[in-house]
Length: 312
Ligand code: SF4
Image 1 (cartoon, rainbow, N blue to C red):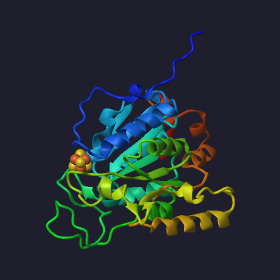
Image 2 (cartoon, rainbow, N blue to C red; image 1 turned 180 degrees about the horizontal axis):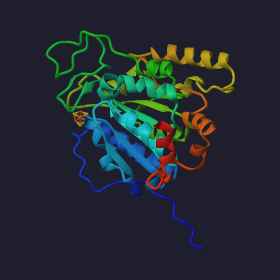
Image 3 (cartoon, protein in one colour; image 1 turned 45 degrees about the vertical axis):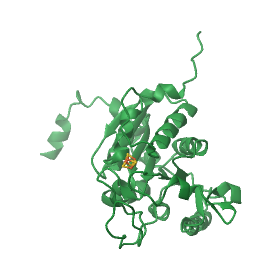
């Protein structure tokens, strides 16, 4: 028998020309996803990548796997539907902060509380890059990027706190240009059974001249602005998922930590718990669901006469 060769990062690349701006943080996230898929040795035909609208929406074009470029803010219902139809797929959803926390905010919240087994990466650059840099929901009040005539007059939302409150069972923050850490964090999220969410800080050199590589990677009072939670002894993992007290305590700890911003920006896993997934819930209630994924059901040749008769 010939041994299968290990999959390499190259296998997840496509020949499609990448047309992001030079220096865009999206490049770092794209490579990190490809490296994570290679690390997990996932066959490309078992992976599906979904996106919304925005610069990040082009990501599925650049990854050799199934891909679906959906509508603005609608990436999560599409990703969830695919996972429920074929739970053998590894589903990765990507989108920008405007897409996910603006128009898609309702889907963001409701996907989290279902705990469907998929990974959602938000490319957080604080602006709507594709439409020339308007303030996105993550841009703080009073900030004014070079593309804005006036400073933002609304408060920003806190994606980590929102994800924890919504019920995501893996909540983390990454950095697009973290060559070593981001692929590992994405692999961890993909490996996690349940809804995994990573808010990825992404530089947009074209429109955001505030959250730049230089600002993020600066040293503040002899400490790097960005630091790994694990380096500080922080542990967000729930050891006993049957203990509601522990879940509440870990969520409260993660919520508090999520408000740290400015001179100190934590990266890594804020909260993780192995809780019952939506699929496990369905398997218990619908034995047919447990038997085989819906995509394998022979619905085309099913006799629905009895059903129609019952409805008369
Ligand atoms: Fe990247 Fe910003 Fe250019 Fe969009 S506008 S491709 S986010 S640098």
